[in-house]
Length: 152
Length: 152
DNA sequence: CCTTGAATGCAATATAGTTGCATATCGTAG
DNA sequence: CTACGATATGCAACTATATTGCATTCAAGG
Ligand SMILES: [Mn+2]
Ligand SMILES: [Mn+2]
Ligand SMILES: [Zn+2]
Ligand SMILES: [Zn+2]
Image (tube, protein in one colour):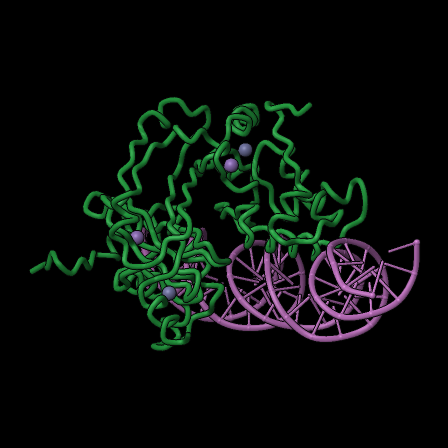
């Protein structure tokens, strides 16, 4: 029985299909990201993994890089200095904008419908190759706004 | 006589109006960005300035940070590791998406009309504070595409 | 099991940006 | 015009994030 509310995919198959070895570290990275509501930085992921068992942070960087290059993860620039990573868009997880809180560094997924946009003209007329379109909203998240009020 | 095709603004006045001291370095940073067709990284700007006279790179970082905080410049995340800076949007220079070439690192301004989008619903319903909306297209620029073909 | 190429760990290195503090410059009051 | 206080700049050290080289371990196929 496979739940369709909790979207745990078969990550081993996902890796195999991409021609990648199935290793504990790769599965654990994917599980962390799958379990997260929002994209995480390499540091976030490394800290999370390190709580259950030791992984080298370089390994985390290499896994992320590799999974991004195979289209399994997507890498988002965050408005801060660290990239954030999330499961790549696919049929039941369409591309969407993200919100980045410049105070706490938290990144959130927004609904795909929150910022509707038509890319067909751009894609038809742009003279280079388009690989990705990234939309990021920067600001202060709800939680931080509340904290800021309390502080004053 | 003031040209209206070549958009050299009175940067000294711009600084004064913002309550900032008018220094040679600040004027030179603004001139470099005004003369550039596309947003530049702090490193680009520093190299350009250093060709005519010596400036410390820390000074460039501090100028950029300050001008961004006063709304004179805007800071764009680039898909790579370095931020890029350009003159902030205003009435005759509306916000627009940017293209980032992942091969040569060049960033280009796109026409504001190239990716039309309606932000009103998002702005009305988002529970946090929205400071900026950034749209970036990543890919390979025309020039790099040509070079890549020649190489193969 | 064995073999082999890929994955991982670890140390060193790279890149971009930041901080502390001393000195130089700007803006203004006299 | 000059002097003074505030701020900008230079320089060195430092931080945060990511990458590279190389030795060791592990996964996948026979
Ligand atoms: Mn997302
Ligand atoms: Mn632009
Ligand atoms: Zn926040
Ligand atoms: Zn290019």
